[in-house]
Length: 319
Image (tube, rainbow, N blue to C red; front, side, top):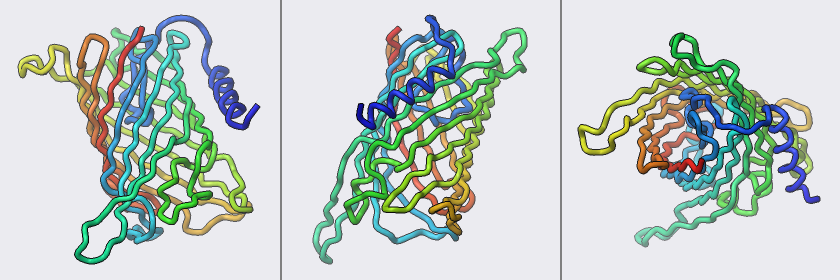
């Protein structure tokens, strides 16, 4: 068995052990508190759903420990296509698997007065498997009681990362370089007209040896707060069903990294973001979601990347 097969099998076995295995649809409402962290969630009575999206990042701006922009090599822009499938495991839980195709681009240096050219490389990103289990269900009789979900995910390091790149401009970097395990919780007041959501997750990376040095990124903590609601667009001749609107903010904090068990000074990371999305039905079993998300929307961006992502996603319920 190859390393790829071992990692995939371990991910599926570990996720299956978290959630109850039984037939049936997922009746838990998909939370707004996730803030787009997961590409696909199952809505009430959905048993199987597929998802495809394309995300355009027209500019990437890396920052240093003091928040100043770095004039270093790296992609200028990125296009990410994501494919995912979600399967209900029980009325309270579902699993999601996803994979991405990444295209990194950079404006090639050229002589003054000549037309600029762009060089790019494409490759598969690290796959991921995740799942949710609903501890507390929504109740019509108790609108102030939140839905409470626990979530977990695993992303194995399968493809080339910054630690084993062979390109001076990092155009062949499509993965993170470390196996990641994520756990968290998600609360959503889904019975209110304006629905607040709050999610928090912790991501831990597995120490891995790169170029003879044992490296381990710091623990990543992400918090997301969002508000969502629906409006009727039938009067405007768009769609008869309600259109869902969501907006929120995110805060990412990563602790100091370690190299050979020694702390790397000034390696902590921080970045705050904001997002707005609109979700509307397209056909009988399809939906379209448009999202604009800004990393570095407010506050200092430290040892992180500031960017704006424009995403269009499509989902279809198969059963």
